[in-house]
Image 1 (cartoon, rainbow, N blue to C red):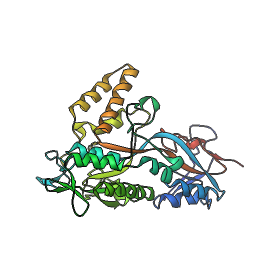
Image 2 (spheres, rainbow, N blue to C red):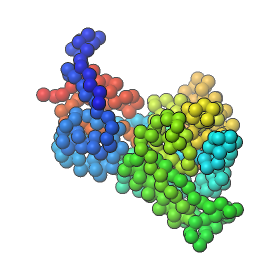
Image 3 (tube, rainbow, N blue to C red):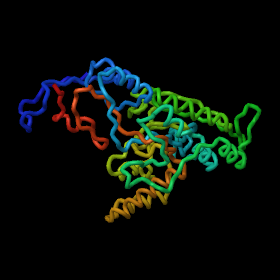
Image 4 (cartoon, helix red, strand yellow):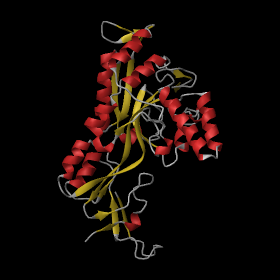
Length: 351
């Protein structure tokens, strides 16, 4: 809990419009939404990754409304490029290793075909997320028109079969003594667990066994050096979360540069948790950082998007706008490109 009182010497006259503020953290997104939309206990709730069906039901409580603003959020699945199950000099997912299954492009391509984005949008996100084939979906001038997504379990099975991954008596495909068994982690959150279940079911049909792993958000999104379950360490095969690009995606796309790889040496602080390495990507990104023509620069950053999507370094799921709940009489200007409280001094309650 954080509490504050008005600064009477604030640099803008007659601002802010309230004498005190109380911010409550912890809990879960559904409870936060309920405290505004249904009970009216609070005035504002942010980052509501809640099934749209639940939000619509809570809005019927009549206490508040859901406000959706476009931004750079992308819910996506990451594929580990190194071997997270082998230690080299005490380091898991070392750059000196290759992922035993994802080294085969057919496996990565099959996985991309096994993510039913349309159903995830329709049955989980609704207004709060639309299916996309791009890692950078907003701003629109940086959105690639070269990509597309497809859901096809039969096509995925055929790809694996052709690549020599044959189903055994247990229904799991194998090749050269290696079985297609994957661990898929994400933070504890109802929409994420439902998405994991949809992906797991499709993979099972194609002969891939997926073990779903859930991690408490306070651990998953932490930088705890002692904990192996953080998203930054990414010590498993697949992981899923939302990343935010901001109004310009250059810094965002730095997350796939080879020099940004998260390693034991840099205490897993590198942006590149997939540890993917590509000379073409590095050169394209470097060219974008020095290109002064905005059209050419946008084209280079779009190419960066296409490289990570088409090589299945990431599998975009849904583009997530900012979703907040506001009490009916609260007037607040929100932006998808900044903190929800960027204009806090000008918020007020209508009387």
